[in-house]
Length: 112
Image 1 (cartoon, rainbow, N blue to C red):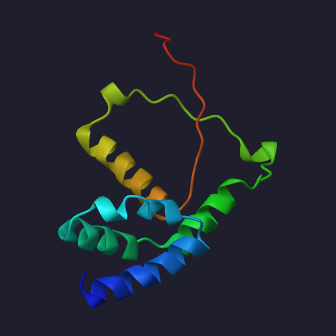
Image 2 (tube, one colour):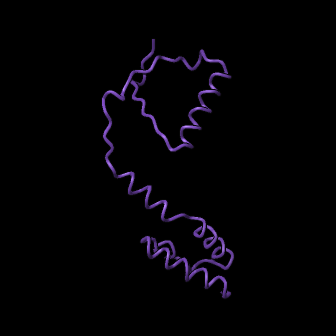
Image 3 (cartoon, helix red, strand yellow):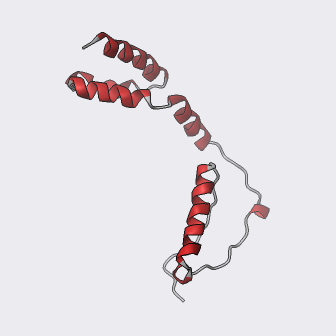
């Protein structure tokens, strides 16, 4: 194994240890040189700090006031124009990218 690869591996071991992810390298010795290089590249692109923060935040309970919950109007997707559907898809994508969330609870299987 070349020195650059060994140096990268040593640095990654420290990071993986810090984030309790050492197991990712369990089969390191079974990989060929190209696979090792590819794995190191992939691991270097992972933001372990961000993943940990997201995980910790996912366990937090957020209080929502019942006044924030309101009914939505019925929308028949099949009756929408393609432009209207694309508009709503774009709005949804923008909301997701902004890290916001909305919850809609519906009964399924009902037909009018």
